[in-house]
Length: 239
Image (cartoon, rainbow, N blue to C red; front, side):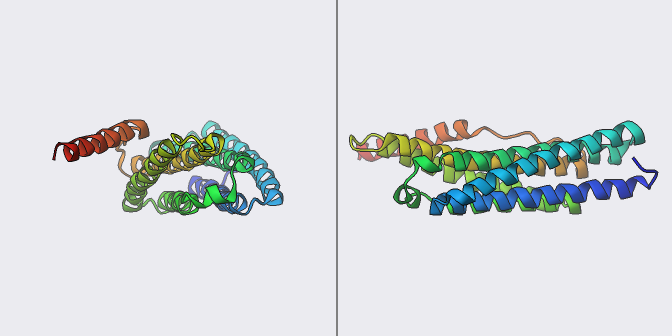
């Protein structure tokens, strides 16, 4: 580690984080496109890029750990480096989820894919990732809050897919394997959004020192939603 000023080193590490983020978001969009068009060559390229992301993630973590050992930062500088390590890990996991989407490609027909709004859902998740990184670079609390608000929209989309799949799967002529694959893709995108929210939470902590806890998980909200639907149906039946 050089003897350059600490703030220059942190800026450099942050720029590397942005580069990894750009690759991760690009790979997500390419994964959605490859699945939509059943593009096997595109799927292979996505796996290659994911390996590049993995290598970059490890190198950035090693640089951050070396920074901690040699510079021994304190206060805000320390929080920033720890945030970079955590965000770096979230980005790597988002990259892995893009590959999981590709893994499901052989199980899905174009017709089944078109019946769900995965592309729109994925664009939302990708936008969340981009905004969360922008919030980190600019130390923007308001932008981080916006990312957290978008997470609920993704949860609503995922709950809609869950309900649609459970309704369709009851049909005797349903293709169970395709429906399960569809639910898995929706879950992968929902988890990407969760990671983007985690990044936003790191930004909020970095800026304010406030630790943001996750609200109720997806399945808690799903149960609440189903109970609400059932209650509505029950009241209709009483009329």
